[in-house]
Length: 375
Image 1 (cartoon, one colour):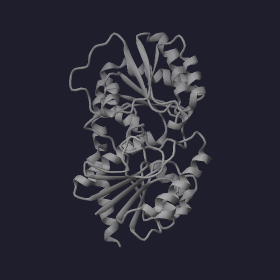
Image 2: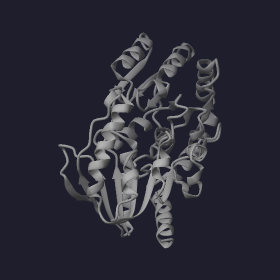
Image 3: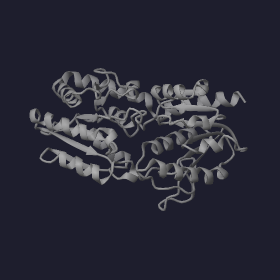
Image 4: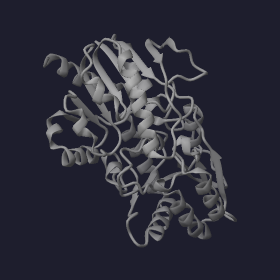
């Protein structure tokens, strides 16, 4: 098959400025190429990368692109410009996978493209009426599938749930026995944005640390608005909340090998997202699980596709009026139940193996073949 993958205008591929989505699509593209398919990836231009190159069997074509802004309306205009200028450059392909807002509306009519598959990794915002002739929608979780079905039921029979993937050759448990540290580490990895609940985590840690003074809270991720963070004002507020507490702000780590080491050097992972209509899957908790970390997450529906309470992680009620106390109690339970935590960690690591690149790539290839048979 000739497979083309069109990314949006924000992040370069291979990922050098973060972004879980570019990272795993690079991994899937390489799996497609290894299976003998002709693969082209269209992505934004970056000064550190050539406009055209082949890496691990995948051809990268880089044109245009913009830095992301904190304003969604400005970004929609930028993305529209990117889609209009990218559409004429689309290569001849049997299957075109799109990870972008506006591009499917134009690509569905392109004469050189046989089948269009839209990878849906965000909650719908009413745009699916623009995608009337798209052949298939690969949605990353059941909550997104349900939201699309409610907004635009006409696409129900064209949706398939195919989860995000992680690189299990990089994210894996520590092969050596864990080092017994005098200080335990509670880890957060993700964007420093209000919708991620980082402020809630620090408030909970302030109470939690009164009973567990030997635990450090380590916060990893970008705060800049053009990297999806909440900006300097939010970061300042977080640091004020953390004043006097054992909290480390590490900043961004874009190298996946370094990030995997960060996971493996922690004792518990917490991802208290509050994004009811923004959290679509949760790659960071899955990466943590793959590294043998037990995740503590909010009770958003998307996490429940792979996290079962007290089986592969812990879930707390972020919607409760006592959400901070709920999180404190959950963290205390995790740290106190040492025998249970080892069993849950093992279950979590085994569950994460189901989301490796090879497995998820195979799911996509089966769907692509079915689409082409139907033409």
